[in-house]
Amino acid sequence: MFKPHLHTATPRHAEVYGFYEKVYTVIDLCAGLTFLVGSVLFLWESTTHFATWLFIIGSAMFAARPLSRFLREFHLGRLPLPEDDPKT
Image 1: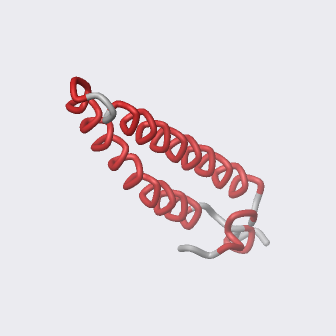
Image 2 (image 1 turned 45 degrees about the vertical axis):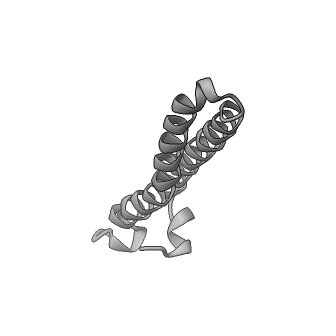
Image 3 (image 1 turned 60 degrees about the horizontal axis):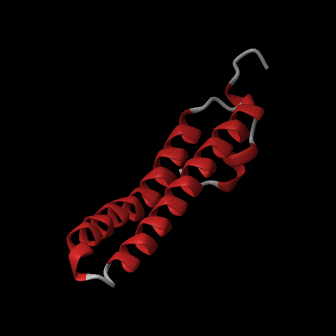
């Protein structure tokens, strides 16, 4: 795991890598927006409860970032490599 050469070892590896990079980017964007909206909502006392929940959700999203990287590397590590093919 966490071997950079696996990111492009085969076309399938590159496809899987790209998918997880998109997932990571979406998580990152959503977490940032959640914290931004939560920060704005803290400006008014009437919305602090909702703002607190947005911070909790944003924190969970930030925790999901390294999880998505771990899942990517695990998935890449399980894909077959050309040298694994017994026909060659």
